[in-house]
Amino acid sequence: MNFGNSRILICPFCGKKKEIMSLLSGNTFRAEMWSDNKQIAPMLPEISYVQRCPQCGKYYITERQELKYAKDSCSFDQGLLSYPEMKEAFIQLSEEGFVNEEEETKVRMMLHHAYNDYYYRSYDNKEINAEDKTLFHENGSWLIDNLITDNVLKAEFYREIGEFEVAHDILESVEVEDEFLKRIMTQIQERVQNNDCRVFKIQ
Image 1 (tube, rainbow, N blue to C red):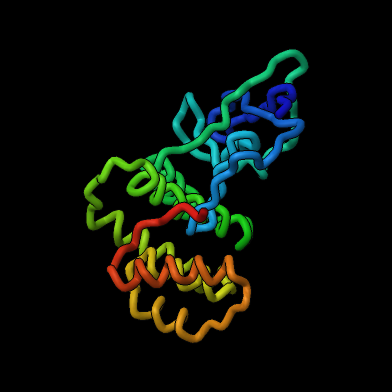
Image 2 (image 1 turned 135 degrees about the horizontal axis):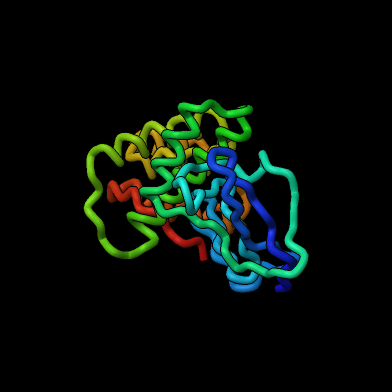
């Protein structure tokens, strides 16, 4: 893994400069894959698609900015957001309006992953409040309708948002020959039967 010079971002609201990580090379050694389609690769870190300004607290999307790099500095800051921050970002960016559906899809997937990070991947056994659960269900339903085409992943997302009967019916209708995929389906089905909506690591 090799780092490059810092990438420079400029807050579109207050003009504050922020330096974040740039990566010249990396690899997927020791990468983890999770059932919600999130990959965690220690040797291939990524900057956050959505960034928070450290001065005004507003959120903005990195892909809307020009590629600018510092000449003599190297940052390791990815600008990662917590789930509470990601909720704020989603509300703000939704009110402002997305440039296209691809942009909205990326932000919504970030929200989905951040929720699972906060409530499940952290292993803190946090109690889920009703507002978060409703938002997660609505957001997951949007992703199922607008992004996910693979039936196994669709069943997994239905399971995660608590639609266990729908997830079960989809899995019952899917026929696969790949043994690895069959094992994943079995793990999903076992959790469906237990009304378990927690994400799990794919071995």
